[in-house]
Image (cartoon, rainbow, N blue to C red; front, side):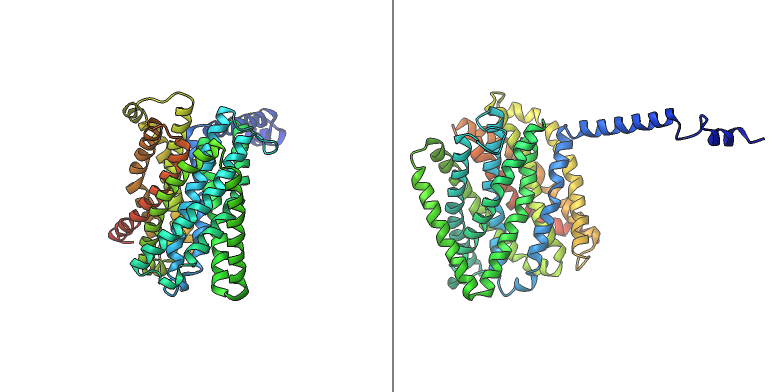
Length: 434
């Protein structure tokens, strides 16, 4: 006689895992799990984790720049310009995405790509004009401080005008439709564009701007007809932007956005130039440990995303009339900061692991990159979080548009904060024996 348990398996009894009831239970459990996952990604921590996970893409930007490691000593202007270009990308991209998210909530922008409102197109034109103004100012300031620092020579002045302007304009022309599509998609899916849009697009834009930056570097290094093509692109950009500026000079929204945004991004340029000096001084360390160069864009980008999530949510709250006093908001924001920081800290560990894999362990151990990445986060996130809340309130109280101020300011400050935090983070990793 066949034992009961074997008989049940053969004949489809209660112990058979593929019975009707068994399939129903498995299907029910799977459905419940999927439901819980969906609910998690509708929470602040879930959407934060989703948004910051895109910063893994920023590691590819670092990997692209790392291919110029042999050129760092011969052409230090490459390292000197990389952080300012990332800062400009972050500031202008943040201004565009922050305004777009708020305008979607207010209904002044339609949640569709085609046949959008005049406010949307005026925002686009403002961003294009602002890009040229700010990159020219950024290049000039970066040139001066890098000459003083010894990272550039007087004969390289033209590089600090051509390279940032062409690279950033090409990146912005690519990122505007991407940003619009992601913002509209998240809004139509019932997600919060204040949490998702800037972190996702900041990471994608890091790759976009880095690809154009690398392309422009090659045009400079190859010289000849390639460099002439770069000069031609610069002249065409100036001509087109000059026409747009003259056409829109009487539009009030255009003037306000350009005036407020340009001022903030100019301040961002100052910080970006300082970041370039700091990074160029880290050249020997970066050359010895390529994984650090791979890691760098993710460190700056993620810290800016942490602040931008808080700041963007705050600007929308202000626009909808939910704002409170700064001290009251500060007392109520402890939970929000924790909800954002916990998934952020986890992602910083992931960044260290991925940077190690991408650099094939050359010059830096896994533990070194993980500890450096996590230490950089822990040393800087509180400062940037508090600044994001304060900047939203102070800009509103001064009668300014917080969407023109907060994210660009956070981006520039976070880039500098992360760059400064890299050195003590490296020391912490070395003290721990990595």
